[in-house]
Length: 194
Length: 412
Image 1 (cartoon, one colour):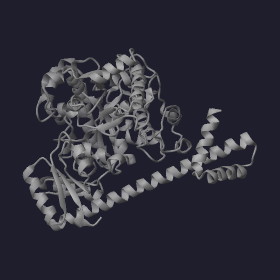
Image 2: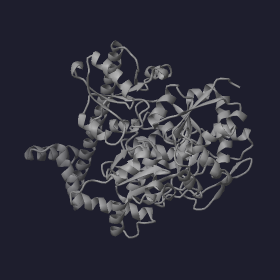
Image 3: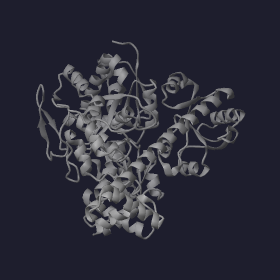
Image 4: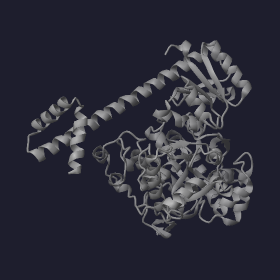
């Protein structure tokens, strides 16, 4: 995503500090879509605004809620960056190095915010693509298992060889313009009925 | 003794009591530990600060050190625990509307957690059939006993799939408001929030955590593995102080004073009466009795099995070995021995088989343990963790059972 169109939502209860960070973000070329306080309908508001990135006060009582949203596929996970006070900065700097979380420290000049935001997004995208890849591998594996089971059923019910069973499944799929795995699923369901 | 202050994080809840008491009643000082307490607003913040070396030790949900160690969550960082901060204290509460609907459908549901779970599954099916919105339950964190007890209970009735019921994280202080606003149909949360819903008449308590699993694990003291390795003496001193503080908390004559201490804004900051009411319920909060502070490997193994069962853990692992690597019974015993306290001999027990208090072999003498029944009559043997997984409904299981079986080692 080109960074000039990157939309950010800030979650911070401290209004004055939030203003400083917002100015720094705008100066760095980002669009701040909304500034939200913790409480009530935060979850719904974030879902509705659908930002590219969330910047959240480390001390926000809603941190666990926002992290929970990241877990949910149906809620479209967003990368999240923590925002901490300068007083906390020393202890938290190790967090960034340790890969714990991305942190923005209050009072940072605009030029130093960009790299943090970019790293957070890159890391998040890498994580998401790993998740997607894993889900796809799993689905392929599940499909192969279904096809194997359907082959087994055909072999025992119709006394055919494994190759013949496979050809039978494939021919049925082609004749009906259906996916092989759907035919396999039908065979299994039918066998369970009978 | 190391002069450096040990930084301890806690979340403002009743079961942070041993930490508050150790600081306020001189137990840390007696063991030569200088501490700096830090009140934290969320579990994610506690976890991040501990992992980032901004804290040395922390009050954590029992599954959190396991989750961080195996990489369930945003990062992987080996954590260990040698001390449980208490057993039990949760409850499942539902809205008055859901309760009426449930009681009509399953008259045996009130007072019977299994009947209630089955009734709820029928109710969910009926709702689905008429296109009504799905049920929504609140929990406190994705890796928490609240989530696992709730999901274990839902699954027992037939609601095992993640999408069968919408489970969402809601900060505990907002749970009751969310129930009253109709955003939730129920929740599983620690005290005093179920009591508050019941007192206000907006919720009905359906099952306590104790009903679901007697004396279930709840919170632990988590530390980084490298800290435990490099600072063994400060760690043991911390454990000794907290063991003594836990025994202090358990004494009935201290409960009133404890409620007053926790009510202070720098600790829980909730009304004293509310805190005291739940502390006065016999057996609801246990800090020392029944070896409540012992980090049972079987508790850890059960938790890892839930992570596998509900699809949070996506790779095969040796359940008992990881459980024992994170839940450090050995370190606990050293600290207990230094105090001359009796401690269990074994690292694990079969869960779900004791309906009354029983004596487990211990040193220097046997240890009295509490009942450990599950509401569904099941039992859990860490030695046969994968067989347990094979026997429960686990539609979200991501790791093939044969792969898991092959990963199990041969611990004695």
